[in-house]
Each structure stands twice: as structure tokens, then as C-alpha cells.
Length: 186
Image (cartoon, rainbow, N blue to C red; front, side, top):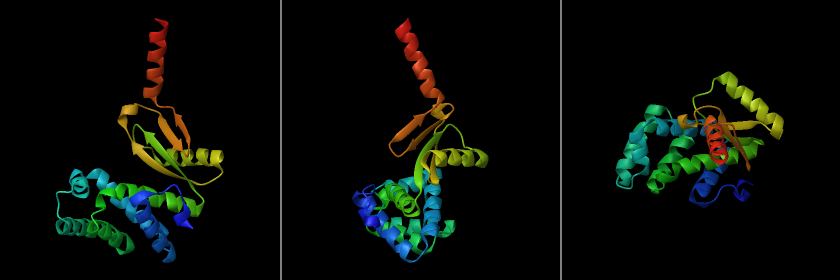
């Protein structure tokens, strides 16, 4: 049962579990995940939306009206929209990023997938994403869902976190180790 999953806990885990169980019962797990991914992308693109979600200054009704407008414009409806509105009404919208992450973890466990957090310097092409998924599948023996984060400060390469394992092949890390080796030598 999803509630027994120890990887999700706290407020975000409880909300994610409730959403997952509802979506599973109505057989719309993938649709809800797609809607949450779309909402997360909107959050990442808009500083104003981030402010609306995180700031306690906004009254619940103002936050709710603004969120409804965003959801309508984005085409997010059904269970996903209702869930986000419940978070807003309960003054828990600030935790939406953690709820989305926890929901993804529940879906991955339900589907027998592993989830990898990948940090890259610039966006990867679909071909490179597919190659990375294949490489990770050969290591884990499971389908791998990727959470890709773009961080130009790593300069190049990538950082992959899969479960308790982390592979850091970023150029920033390699340059730092050369710098430390030169300091020790000189």
C-alpha cells in the first residue's frame, strides 16, 4: 500500500499519498503526474507564481482566485486542479514542490520505476535523454524516470543521483579536484 512507503513523509507525504490513492482509484495516475509536471514547469518559469505559492502575505481567497486563473489558462483541470485548490484552501500551497516530488516517488514505486535526479549544465536533447535512460536501466534493471534540473554552474557533464548512489562527472567537480591536487603538490 502506498501509505506504507517510507520515502514520503510529513505534510507533503500525506498530501501526496492522498492524491496518489485518489488518482489510482480513478485510474488517472499518469494524467495527474502530467498535470503536476506542467504546474511545476509553470512554477519554475514564473517568479510571480513562485511568490504567490510561497508567500504567506496573500490571503487564502486571493491566492485561490489567482491559482484558479493560472490553472484555467494552463489547462489543468480535474483531480489535479481540485487538489491544488485544496492545498491552497488549507494554506499548504507553499509545500507544493515537495508534494509533487513525493507524488512522483509514489508513482515510480507503483510502476516499478526508479527515479534519478539529473543535473546538467544545459538542456539535453531527447536522444541524449533516451541514451541516459537506457544506461541507467542497464544498471538498475528498472525503467528510470528522470527529474532533470539545469544548473549552468556545473559548466559541463552531469550529476546523477539514483537512490543512495551519486555519480558526479561535472566539469566543475573535475576542475576543483585538479585545483586541490595542484595546491597539495605546490
